[in-house]
Length: 101
Image (cartoon, rainbow, N blue to C red; front, side, top):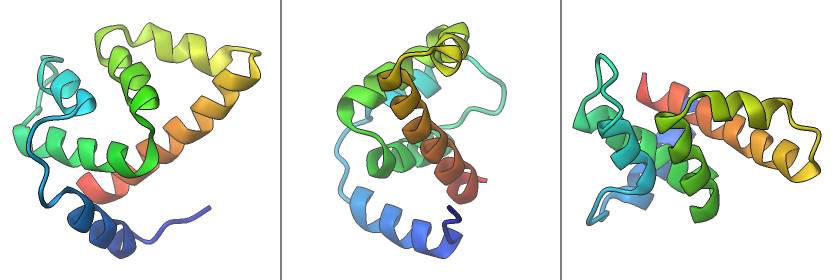
């Protein structure tokens, strides 16, 4: 499924215009120590998470910043729930890439 970047931008702007505090993904991003990390980029990634992932999904995905190997474990899992999460996680990644790049 292809999502139009302008549509993503409009939705993200309307959803997070009044966000009061950093979300799970933003905090994990900021504390990751990766090169190029900025508050703006991490905030943008959080916005993408807010429209594509549940709070539980966000908690799980935030763990990937601390332990990237866990993403591989989930991706290769045979469990149906992991496969469903991975589809949502991929949509999150695609959305973040389109909106935050």
